[in-house]
Image (cartoon, rainbow, N blue to C red; front, side):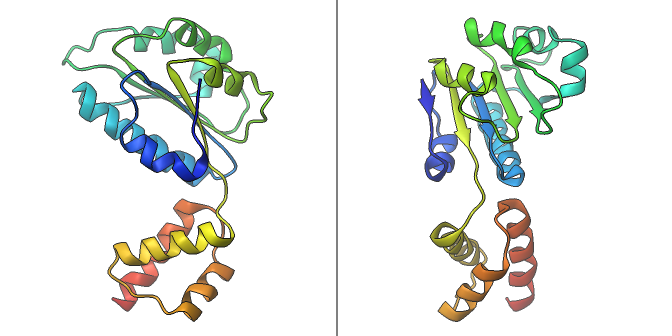
Length: 194
């Protein structure tokens, strides 16, 4: 059972334990869910030696539920471990039936990344990932307060920009909580001031 807190997610995802190869990324911040999914995919490609990610949407999985297990359990023609990514951000389809075989019998040499929207603690998808010893469930919530200010400061430092406290306060008051969107706005701003 691996549940990672939002504030520890990046550190965990950069170097997940070798036994964890299935990741559920969910929450009310779709930008962060997507950023973290891409991070896991990069780690999986580096560790597993594959050269591409197989991405699927919930529409395809709803019509072909066995596809995810088939892809995860198949050998790559070009070598490396399969990396399968599934987006179910809109919640229109229940994909737990397609994922149950993998959660019950995790493949030894495949990676699975699932991007989802908000999930309650009672959500079957979330419960299944949280119960598996070979999977991790990682939330992504909107930034606010001190975490938003810390995010702005870190983004500024990455861009080589020194922030005055008043500027940091003003940005924190006007930026939204979506990390991906906020990062884009900050990068544009820092490009102009640098």
